Structure formats: C-alpha cells, structure tokens
View 1 (cartoon, rainbow, N blue to C red):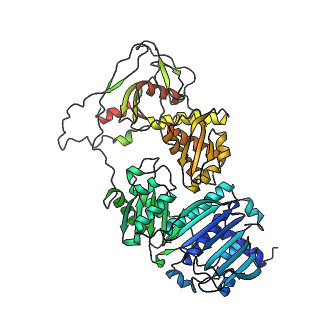
View 2 (view 1 turned 45 degrees about the horizontal axis):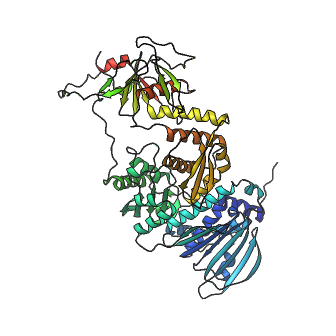
View 3 (view 1 turned 30 degrees about the vertical axis):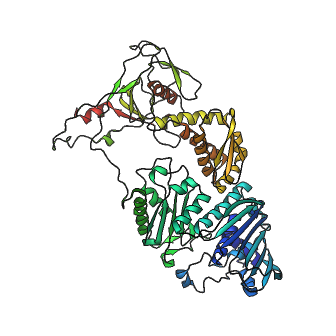
Length: 626
C-alpha cells in the first residue's frame, strides 16, 4: 500500500519551475515583465546558446536594495499584491512571486541591482540555493543573468527543440513585449549579433505603434493598417483592410493592459467581421490594445499567463466584431453577404466540334433582354430550392473528345488530332467510380467554375480546387519517391521575414533542402532562397509569398516531418494552382479533367474541400416545373 509523503523542497521547486518555465522563452518573458514593472525605459537583452547557455536582461528600472534582493528569489515573494483581493486591482504583469524563484531552481542565476542613489548588491543562486552575496557597481537598475538553464533537469532540456526554433521563440517574446510597451527601447543581441535595436517611441499612440510595427512586422503591413479608437474597453485597433490582407496568421496581436495574450474571443470576432470579404488563403493582420479594469478579466488561469478570461465574453465578442467592421468598412455593422434573388443565366456560345488539331473555344454572347416577372409569379411552393437539388459530389473526367499528350508543364496537356466529332473514343485504362462520361465542355462561369455536360446533367468544377488536387498528388509522389529535381536560381531570392519567423524557418533548413529548397541566412530578418524544386517554377513574388507562408507553418513545434510535408505540398499546390477569376482555355479545362481522372482522390482538394458538384437533369427539370 502506498504511503503519502511530503516532497522535499528541491523536488517541489523543480516541479514548480516546470509549470512556469517551459523553455528559454518562458524565462525571458518573466524577466522582461519584471523589467517593465520596475519602470524601465531601456532594456538590453543578450542571448547565447539559444538561451540555454545565457540569457542576460539589463534594465534601468527602479532597482532593488539589499533586503528586496534577498527576498526576490524566495517563493511567493512579491511587491505586487498583499491579499487575494488585490488581483481585482492589479496593474502589473507579475504578481505571484514565482518567476525568479522558479528560474533559480533550474539554472545558475546572478542578480545585480541598485536603487537610485543607493548601493549596488549581487546575489548568486544555483539550483534554488543561495551561494554568494557580494557588492555590485552602483548602476541604477537591475541585471539578471541566467546560465546553464535546466542543468539539473536534463529531461526537460532534452525536450527542447532545435536552437533555431528556440531562438525564434525568444525573439517572439521580445516582439510581443516591444509592441506592448512602446515607450521602452529594446536592444537584442544573439551570440554577439545585433538582431533588434528598437528606440523608445515618444509620439501619439497611433504613430508610435505604426513605427514599432514597421520595425517588427514589415513596413508594408504597418502602412496598410487602418486605425480606429473606441472608448468602450479602451480599444485601440490597428487592422488591415479587406484589400490588404496577408498570407500568414503571424501578424495578430492582442494586448490587455499591455499584457500579450492569446484570445480566441477577439480573434474570432475579427474573422467574423471580415468573413464575407476574406479569401480562404488570406488573413487579417491586427494589433488590438485593450484597457480594462482589472476586475473585468481573470489573468490567473494559466501558468504562463498567456490566456485570460473575460467576465462577459459575449459582450467582448460583439463589441470587437462591430469595431472591426467599422474599422474595415467604415460602418458599425459587418458586411452582409448578397444573395441573388434568382439563379443567373449562363450566356455562353460554345464553338462546334473543331476539326482535328483545333480547340474548343467558349465565347460569351450578349445577354438578351430579360422580361421581369410579375410580383406574384414566383415558382410554386413545391418547387425545390436549388440547395436541395445538389446531388452527391462527383469528380468527373473529360469526354474523349480529343486525346492528350503531356507537355513540359507538369499539369497541362496538349491537344492532338482526335476522332471525328460524332465518334466517342473508348476510355483508356481503369476509370474511377465517379467517372460518368462522356463529358462535353460548355465554358466558364465567372472565370471560376468549369461547366461540363454529361449524361447525368450539369457538372460544375471548381478550377482552383481541381488543379490543387492534381498538383498536390504530383508533388507528393515526387517527394515520397525521392525524385526531386532541383533547379538552382541564377540570382537568389531575398525574402524578408520577422526575425522570429526567420529563425523558425531556418530551424527546418536541412529538411527543406531534401525537399528541393536550399535556404541561407542573409541577415536577422532576411533569408535567401538558392534552389527550388524544378516542378515549382514560381515567379519571384510567388516564391516570396510561399516562403512567408511556409515560415508560419514550420513555426508549429507539434508538426512532424510527415505533417509538415503534407502541409508544405498542399501549400505549394495552392500557390501554384490557377485561381478563381483566371481565364482558362477549353483545352486546358479538358486537360485538367483528364488529370483529375488519374488522381487517387479526384473529388477533393488537399484541404478536404469538394472539387466538383453534379446537378442532375431531373432536378434541373424540377426548377422549371417539368
């Protein structure tokens, strides 16, 4: 039978440290919060060995005298609160008194501090035990040095990611702190190399936040922000308008009383405000500063204080939604989707079957004058709605109107002379279950959907989703068969990222090289792309967009190599595929469908979205009361 025992102090301290300090970035976050709470206007940060060897934070804050320095490394020692009720009036970042104690339990820590016109003092702590006390230079402020992090908890050190990834996490902490505290200057050096030198901002909030965002995110993003200030919730919102959305989710920040938090409530409200104008592959960049009474939210629900709970989540959601809509559209309500009163007619003239070697060409014809129906002449109540008529999703392949031959392009095929128009060629090879030919190409609908006729009725193809699937399977086969042909670029492409994203991306550089992408660090925020897979053939701006998106994807440490491979290949396919509103020829449409016929899963894009819908001839007849 087990016996209950009380843990010794050393073991309990290490467990407590694990709750607060997960990785070097957690240490840096706590030290920066202490520096800001101390009233610092200048913070200098030095990092070596991705934070495992050294994290040094120097500030010009109020400093500590000898007595406070001694108390600062004890558990639950804090100057921020005296009773539990003080949490309802909290205006500081730290309050639990666990940060320095937890860090000292798993590192070799030295703190030097001096108050204004006071004497300097130093304390050295190792594994939670004070080793030495000594005088220090009388320089106002505090310097904390953390060395050999997790030296006495090797299991935790073993679970850290690559140095590049850990550096990315450290820089992310700095970026959040710098965006939250505009009046503080930050200087960051990693292994002696300066990464950030951010001067303190002294102007109005709008100008200050834009200047800081330009240095941390990108000048183009900062310039595109629309700024709106709202008295409720003390909201100051910087938001990209619908025509300036970005390809990554990394440029989204929420600060409550200058505390960086992760808030699904705020994020989802902003997405909801833009839902009718946001393309699937675009995301809003935003910085939301909120100033609330401490009693209106609970910050003590997460060990790292990354999450908070609002007293009235619904009120916050609704207010943020309307505020984001006003900022984006200039009104107080989100844009509603416009639903047409009737299904629009399709006016296409399809060229008759061409002679051998010619192509189908779909030509628009002028719309005939339409007669307005009288007010009561709507379809009968028992006529089914169009939404109820959509049958099972199919992925049709083209009729054998002409044969195809693979060209240099990995996706498109070249039409060659076919049999006479009246003769249908037999299908070659095994056909997927969904294939119900022959198919006859009719044309494009709004340059987004391909229209085909087959024996069952009308087939609609999402051209972007369909080509995504073709590209995805072709690229994935090449990767899995280790058949990546690499193309060396004559001039490397420079891609500017945030320093944290650049570090994240470079942490995967060896693996990306096996996938055909050779990357090289050019500066703290610039990466060079030196090679690409031959099958990609991106233009420079397309390559930059892809690398930016990839940098955001690889930043997730939970991604396995296989997960990342699928995500990357899906992203490649999405970037390379034709887009909605792109013109496509009849030959290209037929060729695309022929390729879809060969896919393992021709019915869905890599993201799981349907590629094709079939509208049966019987249901079409019902629309007209037949």
